[in-house]
Image 1 (cartoon, helix red, strand yellow):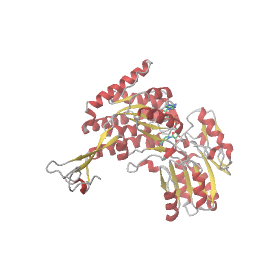
Image 2 (cartoon, rainbow, N blue to C red):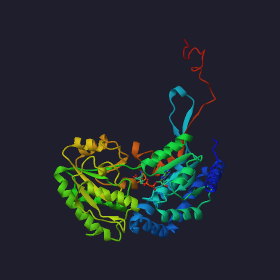
Image 3 (tube, rainbow, N blue to C red):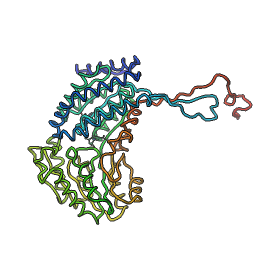
Image 4 (cartoon, protein in one colour):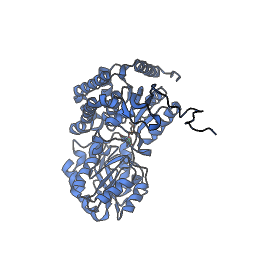
Length: 461
Ligand code: NAD
């Protein structure tokens, strides 16, 4: 593949780094399992060593409380490293598969081989784990990696740059700080895979740039994830789990319940229960609470605050521009075509729509694109199965919210406009691998059937 060297000095440096990574990959060094394990171990040591600085950076960028940062950023990274390290040898081993009788004498294997040099572009909302977990998958699969963290979490971006600089040789892992212009420069370079997490508008830009070079992409996007609470649900438990999922990082979570679809008989009870849970988490004035997250910047603060007028505030409703905080808010009487029901909220506002029967649920969910996540709270297995089976969505939970992304045994990813491809655990390893198919033929005999002229072969008319 040919590519033009970009003009600016910084871009030349980026292209040189990518070229060095490509040369290093071609040397074969990254294919060794011992090399991969060593990279994962170096990453683990660095995350443990720099944990206090990473926690401070997350506090500075998003006012993330340390316990939440540990539970949802550092902890998942460390457990993903352990999970991958213990299994990568098995994942990478060629696997024998069956061969049909028509191919008598031969054997077949699939080999998961590294793709080459990968680009990982991350967002600001979980800026540590959404850069490092794909990195673990890429390294486990034997790739070299260039990382581009989000400029909107600048303290974390700087810490990740330090972590990479102090830990890896640039041939193995490099990091480019910067905004859209840095991504744009990187998108001109000859990567073998691009893994992007962020909004769908930029997802389209990434995919378009990748299409020009036929570079495969994984897109981890967002959307409006419904949370359905049926009349037979355990309301107190549902309230606690929904509130946890919605208010972690002040609602700035790609899989947060975006809106509630509540059976009309339990609406009042659920609103009361969620109100009580919010108070038990953050007191009567969450904005003043030290551990209640803030909105990432003024632009997003104004975008989210504007949704407050899209319905009747039945709980919360306050906002404070000086601290960029918006109180947890429940909105009722929301019109289906209001912006809050058309756009991904990505903030601590929860619209509540009621339904009378399951067909209403299907119709309301279908009015938006296929969501990244879906949650259903019900004691009725038939209802659960109908919701889970008939609505397309990336992944989700029955009787819980958000926690499906915390297990390495489940793939994490969207469907259609909420994303393509997936990762976590072995799924991540496979995302950064090429599944090479190899058939090995025997030379001990040669069955004549396939050859023209063979009496037993196919007749040519
Ligand atoms: P963001 O603004 O930080 O953008 C993501 C990345 O794209 C950044 O690194 C940024 O520099 C880069 N970028 C921005 N403009 C670009 C351009 N024109 N060209 C190339 N690159 C560009 O983050 P965001 O998009 O605001 O993140 C929030 C969105 O991400 C939400 O929609 C959310 O649902 C989604 N999200 C998805 C997941 C997931 O795992 N599926 C996780 C987190 C967030």
